[in-house]
Image: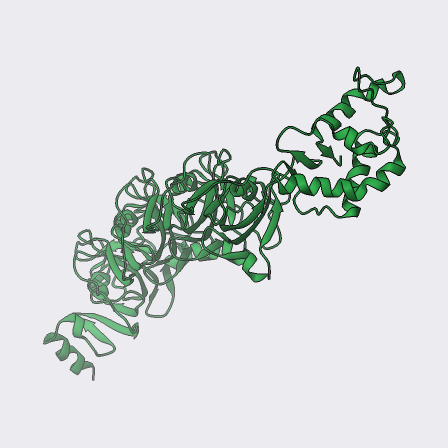
Length: 587
């Protein structure tokens, strides 16, 4: 059997040796463990790092790298190792284990080595190959997975965040970002990383996974690093690129969808409402307004949000959608934000602009239909009847008068509807139609209302159905022309220059008919919604005599000099105003 192995060696290369044990010239090689995967075999000129136990034939140990706590490093084929070891290591794989039996002439010969190795000693080395490299080696990168849509890849001076598992060539783990639960963050090509990692990261896309093998001279070389990475160690990294940006980056805007009807774009100082989904570059969501079922509301360009978002919200249209990529120096920088956003994170926001307004905005009135004939328009104090549909800017329906039997009614200027709608209903013709855009400070404000979000811009589609002209606040009747000169005399039934309560009671019907006649002839106007029945006439008179003037029901009027008795002198101005103009108040 031994002879067969010798013959086999003579006609084969070392890499194809299958016999066990097998000789290299006079070296007997026992390959007692061969790894299932062997990417590379030792050849002349290679450097190796290995552990060994060295014994004599009788099993007595004379040397051990394990006892010294440091693996042996040497170059093959350059005479730096004893000839038997040099020959016995050739063709070996990383993680392979061999026993080399080396005769004296391939070891220390007839002279031995001091007091340790006697002359003509046969030596036995039990070797475990840990590492293998060559000075001609390059950094080896193997792409495991890469995203289909890669819009940007790593370049020098970029800043990257990545996860990694780091092992030595024999598979021993020396570090892992996953164990620390924190990415490794670094500039590329600026000396922050070992040279081999700088090279291995170039061209990577976010989401890509690479297997990177770095020879020692492009890693930590002869010094190693701490206790985890020994001198002259090849490093193996499995890298997942999480993030990439450049310190010179500005925000990037993508996937814009702008409504065709955009007539206004946001500016500094506007107050905006928008929905968003916030993710990292790898697609992991860190926040979303949709889950809270509430928009994010803020002023633009005033530092209330991160700088990148401030920029991203400028020049947008209502209803616009856009994706915004914000580099960390315009987001949360090297500190991140709590446990949610890590340091140096690029943020991606998919935003939908619902509406915006400026605190200086007034009601935007768009007349969609105006009758050709318009003799009279609505004004403050008028009673108006109108139909309306109320929506948000995005078309979300809120309220509609068409959901009820009758049109909506309101007295303008009486604080019966929101200010913006009140203003929009003024100056309308009968049958006119308008679209009103009402900013929140003229709508329901920051608090909103039932069914109305806070700080929402409202859109009203209104149609004026009918209206009645009104009277000033507190008045029940006003003259539209000069009042009759003899009004007091007409009410003084017994012509005694007094109008006591009993005469008022007798004159109620006549008084009511008199007022109705003035309205019918266009000489006066009563408060909208009031009728001149007897009870209304009495109410009118009572308002006149008791609430407005605070007097009893007996007043004396001197026709000759139009003077009042001294007892009533302080009421002269009020009563004279009443009788001369007959503007009756209920306040």
